[in-house]
Image (cartoon, rainbow, N blue to C red):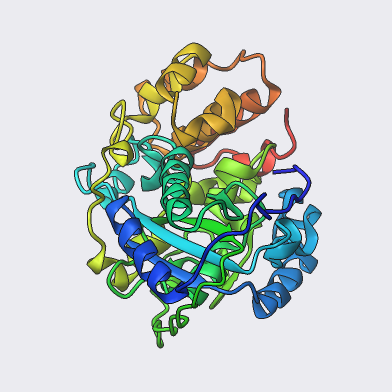
Length: 381
């Protein structure tokens, strides 16, 4: 992600005698490669850049310093990759239809809820391989051409680009929505120097609906189209490296990796289709595992069971931190208490703090007159 920008100018000029015909071929090839939608846009993201800079100025990115570090390279594709004049945006659905029912898992405090996108293999690799194959098909027609492939792996404004390319509109929860697809999908991009015709942008269709705002457990969606990442459970459980704010811990419930509540509440997701990709289906029973079961994983088990998946990036320490919070939010059963006590001497101060908070929360639930752990343990290590 921190590599310097490089030109996508090829050694020999590409042949693009009929851009419209080539664009039609690209759409067909995209579907053959397993993408559910493909669109083409130019690189003007001036409106999105204004919103991005305002969001950063309000510090709503929290400790994601890399969001600010790249400056306008994120909103000006040709700054990131000189020579870029078009972006091919693709969509790949990931809704795991065969997984345990999401709401059923959320309603069972003894079970661990992981965002549905993270149950299978790492989507970055899947999409990048398909985009690379798409680029190779294009090159077979045009000859060498300038391009670079991205999938949530560089400073790219994926959702504004996808909206401009006609793949959907950005909903009030700040996720991209498709009229026939909902929001359970990944996005990928192919930056290119080919002068392809562009698609019409998608129009906004949320209307007066506020289901996503009403569903957010932590109130992270401050207003339509305004997300404060510092309160978002996805940020707290994945991006935040340190302690989860004490006042927000009870609101996480049993969500240990990401959060889907705004998507589960969105009426457009009734049109979502189950993914045809086996790579995105649940592995190791992660769609319905118990908190105690996952909390018992040592680091070797964590690495083994998350190999090839997106969860591994948070590391074992944050994994235990998140699970300790969820166990603290679960009913104070002997099983939960035994699991927590087994980690009271963990080498990580971060883990010990969250375990102590969870045990104190259980003690408080058993003794209504006791001290609220939200106050007694604030700042403990």
